[in-house]
Image 1: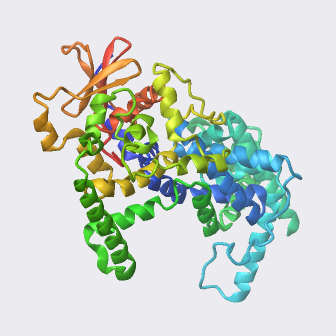
Image 2: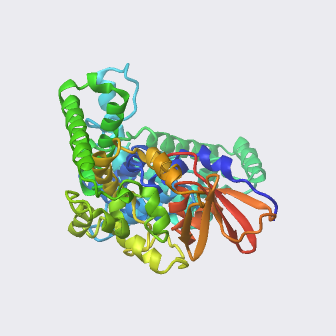
Image 3: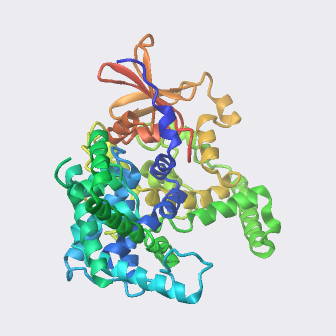
Length: 194
Length: 339
């Protein structure tokens, strides 16, 4: 075995630092971790649950779970991927017990969920954009969960195929197929509305 | 490509996830096939629309609720901040509150100092954690908050007005057994009892009580109590670094009392470690053997700490050099974060 020094890379990752500090009992570390990762967790929960209140509950449960298990996090994947996995499992187990999730976000395009539009547009254009966003949100909410997960992770969260495969625990081929089928279904749904 | 590509190919192409040769062939095809180019355009448009969806931020109420449900994560930063502010002389910022707080602390220190002086038979060991390190090397030595470790607690009880070492961590755990991790003390005891235990860690399992290292909540709660209590007898609050310093450098009076200083010793995972120049070195190591250094946060470091969580205690006050599978490894003392 050659002499190895593994110091450099590990310190460069702020997540590593947070996990480490958490392990050593720094109470501020978990809060930082929350600040860093809660937006993506909340957003995932929101898109999967389709309901802001439910998403808030889920986010809380997810972070409680993350807190309990963080000590056992071995760093075999990135912390982000690991948290996504915890989040996804939590969403599935909670949502699986309930009605199939097909409810669109009622407030899509409303306050707080304003779609990304040019602020220079007039009120009419803004209303149109909001309406368009509502339709996209609805179409997304109606996708089967497996497709929705893949599409959200890819198109809304920007994860790479490899990361998605890791989060979902499936092969890359499956990821590829779910994303494609999800997008195709969305395309048809949105086209049909025109 | 003679036949039209399926949606999967088009979709992967959009994400640049096609192998270069396949992507090249597709581009070739798209140049001559209007319908496929149109399909690709429609798919691209769908993706673009998806990306306009808003990404609302989580409501602030979640973090508030979490602070309540994770007792250890709550208030601690506030405590730290206040103490730091006090130390930095930031009294001006919050005159009323902070000055009051400072006065109370100062008065407590003065009053206790005098009552403490007035009683001659106060054993010095109570004042100096490092002594306990030497005398009870098995578990009490960790520079962790004293109340969490039973042996220290026992010696504390000799103090007349030292309220029983804080029960709160235990209470909070009992209240929400589901959320709160096991109290630090029980974890420590387990480890002391079965030092060489190897826990194959599984990330996704429910954390069984006592197996996972005590989460910071459990550990930090007593820290606060300890700092509060420490104001009684020692100069106020040993931030973690201060506490570490005390472990490393025993007070001069005591150092003088003991003649040649034997190195500090700790027994961990059925091995004995001596602290030499900020490294806990396993006794009996071949000094000539090459040392493989790893960061605690590296994969190997983590692996070791998973297998022997007790090593974390040592790491708080130095690196750890030990024999592992015929090699000499040194886990470097973390330079980041908390001690």
